[in-house]
Image: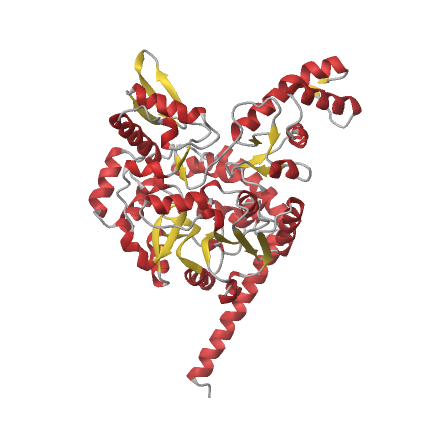
Length: 535
C-alpha cells in the first residue's frame, strides 16, 4: 500500500520531470529560433534608478553596480550597457547555448572584461552568485511554467541587494485577451507544422487573409485589420515565441503583485513612469479610476489596465520592507536631481495664428504652453538632443525662481505624459555635425560583423549597407568630403553598388553627385540618434 509520503514524493518527482522537460523544450526552441536581442531603452538601469529615486527610494549607483539579466538571449541589451559602464559588473544567463555563444563572440570582439554570459537556468542561481543591484528579466515570466514563475520571484528576492530594484516584464490581462484570439487562430492554422519557418510563413499568410476578409464593421474584424497587424510586423522569432511557444500565460496585474508579495517583493512602478499616472487617459476615465481606487495604489494600477486595455507591463519590484518609504507625490523640484532625456520626436512648435502659444509633443497629442520662457527652455532641451540635459542647462542661473518653477512644472507634465524620460546617467554625444565625425566604438566594431548596433541612448539601430561602411570609416580623422571620396572609391571598385531609380550609377562624377547627399543624410542620422562622440 502506498503511503501519503510516497505519493507526495512521486508527485514531486513527476513535477520535477515535467519542469525539466519544459526547460529542455524551451532550450531547443530558442536554439532553433534565436530571439532578436536588442537594447531595451526603458530597462536601462540608470532609468530604473531614476524612477526609484524620483519615488523617494535610494538606488545603487549604476556606474559601479552589479547587474543581472535573466533571459539575456545573445546579450543585445546587456553588452552595450557593459560598454557604457566599464566599472559595473554584468552577468547574463539564458537557456540557449546558441545565443550565449553568439553574445560571447561579440564580447570578445569588443574586448569587454566586465561582463559574463552563461547558458544556465534561472533555478541554478544561488548564494555563490552573490547579490545584484539591478535584476532585469524581459520576455520570460509569461513564457515559463507556473512553478518557474514562482522560482523567478524567489530568485529575485534572494539575489537582490538591499537597495536593489528588479524589473520583470509580462503579458497582462484583460488587455492581452485580444491577442489570445490571434494565438488561438494561428495555432489552429499552423501549430501542427514541423518548423518555425513554416509556422511563421503560414501565420503571415493567415494574417493577410483575415485582415483582408474580416468585416471591419464588427470588433472581430477591426481586431484583424488593426491590432493583429502589429503582431504580423514581428520577425519570425517573435512569432515563434509569442504565438507558438508552449507556454504563454498572461496574468492580471493584481495576481502578479500578489505573487510578488508572497515572495517578499513590493511593486514600485513601471519602467515608464507615465504609465503609472492617469494624466494620459481621458479626463472622465482618470476621474473614474481615482473614484474607484481611492488611495489604493495597486487597485489604481489594476483599474488603469482595465480602462486603457494595456496588454504588457514592465514592472519594477523592491524588497517589501521598502514599500512604506515610497513617496508618490512626484514633486517637480525633484527633477533637478536627474538627467533629462528628450525623445527623438519631441518638438515645440508655435501654434499657427497664436504667436504666444506653443505645442510641445512627442507625436500627435501634446501640451499647450503659453509661457515664452518655458517654451524657450524646452527648445533648449530639444536643441541639446541627443545628449541629455540637466534642469540647470535649460533654466540658466539668470532665470527667476518663478520661471524655474514654471519650467520644472512643464517638465513634470511632459514626464507624466510620456514625453520626457529621466536618468541618473548623463548621455554625452557629439554636438551638432563635427567636421571630422567619430563613431561610438561599439557601433564601429559592430558594423564589421552585423547590421545592427546600439546608440549612446541605448536604442537599437539597424544599419543599411552605406551606413555600415561609413561607421567603419568614422574614426575622427576624415572630413565629409573625404568620406564621400571614400565611398565613391568603393563604388568604383565594385565593393558597393549604387543604384538610382534610373538604374546603376557609374563613373566618378556621377557617383560623387549621387553619393554625396546620401553621405550627408547618413551623418545627419548618426548625429540625431546618438552614434557620434566628440573626436
